[in-house]
Image (tube, rainbow, N blue to C red; front, side):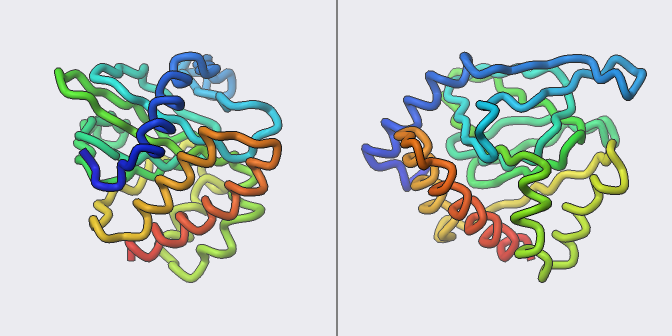
Length: 208
């Protein structure tokens, strides 16, 4: 179990974990592709630009799909696997690491075990990311190139996958983001968007 799980974080994870199955997981074929591939559309409220979700359980078997938003997935407790269309690969995402995905890249989270797994997802609308976050990440040319790729290639197959050190500020900040989002106020977007900007910059530093 990850070390930044104090009682308030545990309660927030439980709250968001219970909400996870009730989110609007809208998987539909993409008419633009002509291939029948599934696309996952924004599962949050229409007023949200950033959202947080938590999978908490021992079984997840997502259909292989693409999504119309940026995402950051954290393996917060235990590991999980993801399918990638690139090289038809199955990638292990160990505890303490993250995956960052572009809009429309192929993805599917998988986990079958008798041990509980926790995956924390931060989802960011594509336009919001390009408009508000991209410039702050431009100092890292590799990261910038990754985030600009969807502007040129709608079906880019790249995502970033790397381990985050135990002592990284990312983990404390992630816990605070989870707590804030689970205890939503009417101003949650104004509170959480700068926090997601901060965690994105920490992740950029870890990636370098």
